[in-house]
Image (tube, rainbow, N blue to C red; front, top):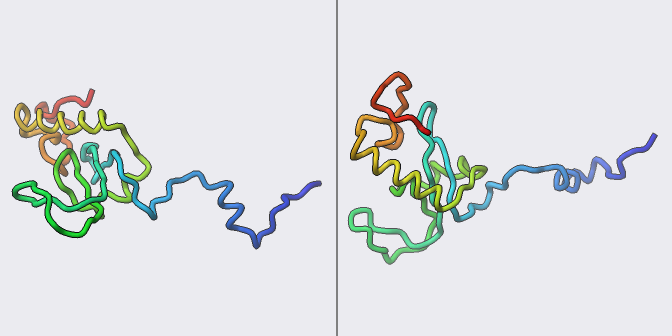
Length: 132
């Protein structure tokens, strides 16, 4: 019978070899997808580290840099989406698809869950477009 050469005292080394998850302790800039609540649609999220933008005019403000987030092209609180979205990276093209779908829904299907972030999906409604 053979034994594993690692001792129990060396748990850090054992965990480093076996852990396959996402390290959410340090944010990573990029594009992700997230669902903010039960029965809500999936949103595209963009994370970046930089100067904040004025919420009314969109101009870059002269303030200290910080982590920021956008959900479907609209500002959202960074702490709401990170680390919830950490394990779901997407491409920029997929993010643009999420943004375009919300813009389309606001014009053509304002009662659907795709038109407003956080609105619950009514599966029995005919006004909610199919996700495919």
